[in-house]
Image (cartoon, rainbow, N blue to C red; front, side, top):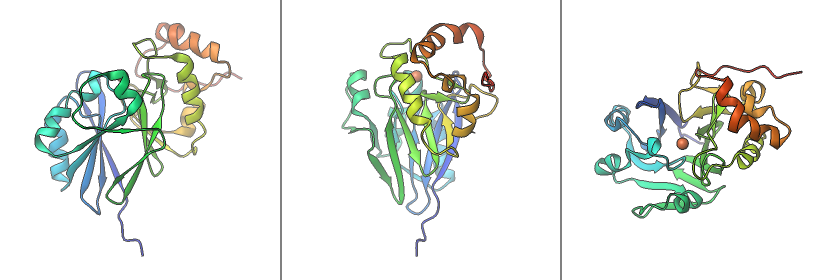
Length: 231
Ligand SMILES: [Fe+2]
């Protein structure tokens, strides 16, 4: 008989850029993983303590400052292992203290919980999404009714187009947890994104690139809402 309790994901919205920091909790082992520790780290530590969890792992969706500026503070309090994709570590070029470098498809075991890493480049070369059961932590790859910028160093809109197409093949009821609170709601389903996220509505990569790199920023503002598909 499987007595393992279900994995739990809780979000904290922290910092001036409305970042979501996630605490993935494995109740059976009382282990927790922090995704993108940044900003008011004490609130992350307090949440883990309230839940009776020990932070054993730090997962990075990518290396931008607003997603990583709390790593050292977490490490000062918890003996945690840092995980990111090898492609992101290469892009980042920072000295990291013995991280575990992954490839897409790898699975991190957090006690009884399996966390699959998806390589989802486009915002940065080594951007990752983390999949736990039917939940997907998307970082800056996919927002609720939006997607990450591709005009920063290492960004590539054509690569992002392919990434979003791959994500659209995941089960429709997959729950999306984005890296920023840019929409009217903080959580969505992939089905809802495939319908109402304008970045998911292109069938021609060139049109996507034009929209991502030019049109979007001139025509849309946060909070993002669903955009009906044109017939
Ligand atoms: Fe970013």
